[in-house]
Length: 71
Image (cartoon, rainbow, N blue to C red; front, side):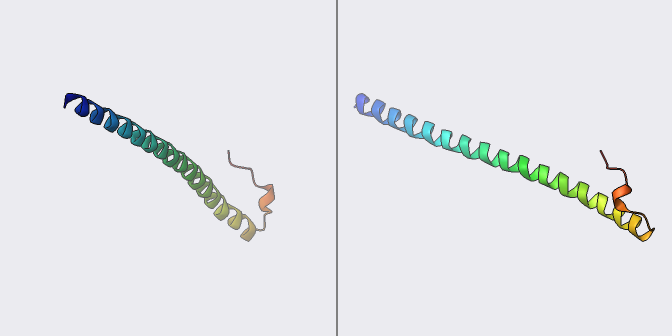
């Protein structure tokens, strides 16, 4: 009986290890997605900040292309 118990524990260990590895992979993929989304959000915020300045320049008769590029 103890041999059967040991085999069951080993089988569960193998199964749980595989499951944990799948979860680690999913977590890594989700973290990569979050990084890309954060970068995209930052770019959009920067663009939206620049748009009102360009609109003001146009209404003041300036060429937005002559405006300094934000760093």
